[in-house]
Image 1 (cartoon, rainbow, N blue to C red):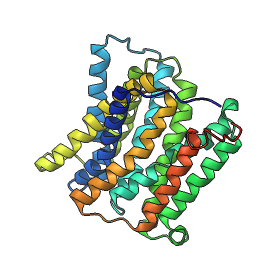
Image 2: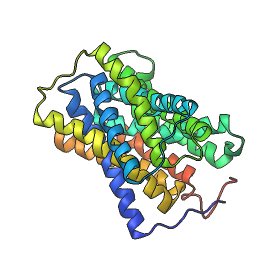
Image 3: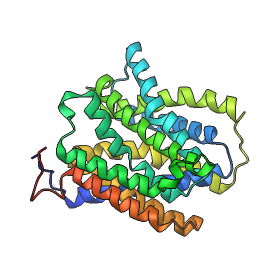
Image 4: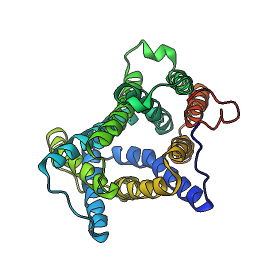
Length: 303
């Protein structure tokens, strides 16, 4: 069985910081949506985020790719990992709580295991992973509520939209492995967010019209957070933690994000989640921990 790399205090601190940043994105997006449209929020997030990331690439003196085929791969990656999931999840937030959105978004890791098992021979669905996936999906169904899966009101559609965004993230992970292998991660991040901007900006102009500049300080602050810390800084920090702690430990971020988002939603937006949603997250978290391997380290299933 693959052992997880032990975490230093600094790695724990940066892991917690990353979870706090991404946990806060749900609140930021909801605040921005109160003043402007979904497509415009996405366009702001990826456009300013791309500019910041290219600034980081320039500061690190990393080479800028020139191969047109690679830029085509960036465009697809940006669509799958940014433009489409950001839009689906933001639209979902118009109709469900930000805390519930973060819980459903945590299904990304579950979808990622399934997609990888289908596409890659070295990512087979072992008994341990199958158990984790089954528990994870059970937690998602419980959080949504089985009765909401058979009706098509706005709330149930919003929850399915968020899950659609999580599935896009899983597809993006597979595409990145196929098309972006060997690139400096900072360059890959800047390229894909640029690809997202090339899609999101025309879409925002078509759907929402010209951007408004009369937003409140709260609205601009929410957009600035989403683009800066929530996108550019988060990607740079993600790759630092990846190098420091390993990919297995990064799964812990998925578990830490929803509690942050739930707490912020309750404190700032006055949200109150149904007990069923919290129990569902508990079941989903157990599935993620089984995928991670920590729960079964003493009595492992085959992996």
